[in-house]
Amino acid sequence: MSRRRINLIINGRQTSLLADAGRPLLWVLRDDLGPTGAKFGCGEGHCGACTVLVNDEAVRSCQLSIGEIEGKRILTIEGLARNGRLHPLQRSFIRYHAFQCGFCTPGMIMAALALLKRNPQPSREEITREMEWNLCRCGSYALIVEAIRSAAAELREGQHSV
Image (cartoon, rainbow, N blue to C red):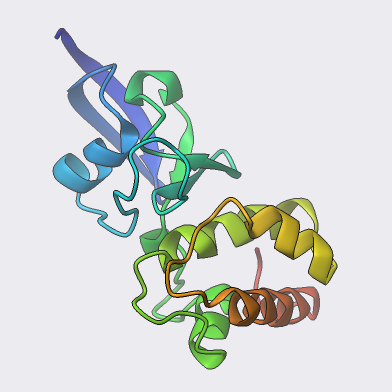
């Protein structure tokens, strides 16, 4: 493994680290940089527990090497709150009790955020279709969809930026 200097923007902060370019983003985030919201689930990109945004697109951080995203903007669940106030998606997940164990919640919220950035007014069917790639072993899907719909409405009303 050869290590090299890699520059990224993580949650709005310029970051530079010495790392093996082939190392998965998930492990760089969790082990080297501190944000632990993205979870290791399946390690194969199927469950969505490790979802983060790279340049506003939802990606599976377990499947993306750090070298592939040099210079790009990475947003994790830890970067959503502003000035101590939770993002509408975070508040909505709490309000709707859209989780039980919470393991999948950061990945769900990040996938939902990517959807709302592309489509601020998704239908129930569009939300369901988009979120089917993020697994919840507790089965909170109906509440997750309602939480996303509520957050989308709040965002459209202009109370918070996506």
